Amino acid sequence: MNHQSEEGWYTDPYARHEARWLSEGVPTKLVRDGKVESYDEPPAEPPTLTPVRLEAEPTSQNGQDLLRADSAEQGDTYNSSAATMGAMDAVGQDGAPNFERLQDGEDY
Image (tube, helix red, strand yellow):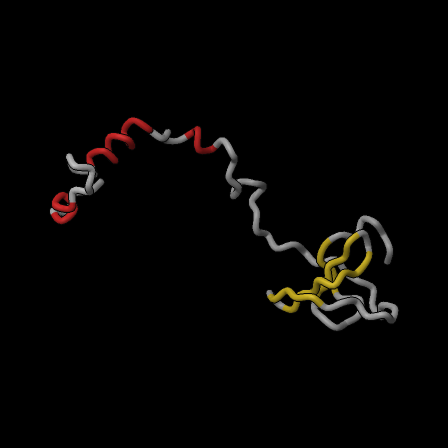
């Protein structure tokens, strides 16, 4: 069972849980029953079953569901001048918020 390539969710070789995480072929304390993950230290006795690799849940779509760090640069850009003018418009002449404009339902 001690194969360095064994990394991921496998059936629990101790038959205590549905799955146990193996790291470099060694059972860890990370276990899973259904969708609930928890910790249970591997027992001191030797494993009773040969672990079988479990299929990974198909949650990603070849990275298409991930955001890139530069994706914000590709869309609408932030206009600091417009934001500054909007903030100034929201404040009255004396520096206090112009609540009359808010009461009239004006959007900022």
